[in-house]
Structures are given as structure tokens and as C-alpha cells.
Image (cartoon, rainbow, N blue to C red; front, side, top):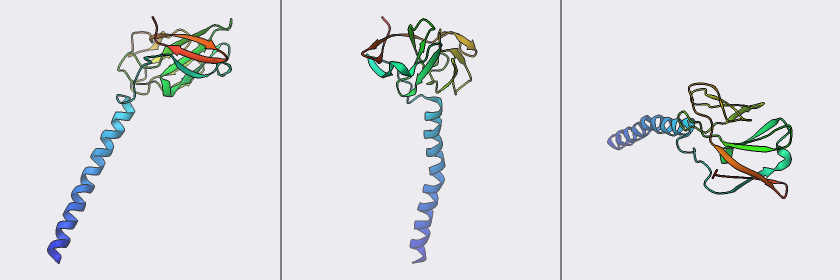
Length: 140
């Protein structure tokens, strides 16, 4: 009976030893966005046109898109996949986007880099309001 307990204990300990490693690998993947950094490939409804204030921006995390509205009411949209390392940007303060991976910052109104390490602007997307709903599409 003690031999059986020892083998069972060994199996449990081996499994417990591997669990933190597997958990770390999954956490690291989701932190750097490698598994979730998909850009738009087709027209996508984002939300109500009223969600984007004049002179402001709204971040659509699930679609990796930010939409901004100029004071004249015109809309612009950018991919929120960081141009430095491909991480999805998940933070918008006012009109400043911040990438969680290495701290690159971008202007949500223009897509331009505000703070390195990124050196390339965000990819601009096509955007329009259809029946009160914002629809973003890949550019071109």
C-alpha cells in the first residue's frame, strides 16, 4: 500500500511542478498579444456612432480598432495592433493609446507615434457610419 501511495504522490508532485510553467506560458502569450493580435480582414460593425465624441476617441478592444472623431464630425479609424512588436493596444486615455508590451504611445486622432519604441504610425482603416452604426474595414 505504501508503494502505491508513493507513486501517486510522485504523480501529483510532478503535475504540480509543471502547472506553474504551463500557466506562465499561457499568461505570457496573452500578455504580449501574440495569440490575439488579429487585424481586420473584412468590414466590421463596431458600435453606435454616438459612442465616439467630437474631439475624442473610442477603443474597440475586441476588434483591435480605435475610432476618433474630429471637431467637424469626421471619423478616422486605426488598427490598434502596435507597429513595434504586434501587441494589441488595450489602453486609451483621452486620445492617447498606450501599448502594454513596451510602452509605445500613439495619437488616436492621427495614428502617429508619440513615444518610442514604435517608429511607424498605426495602420489607418476605412471607416463610415451606416444607419447610426460605425463600420470599419481594411484600407484600400
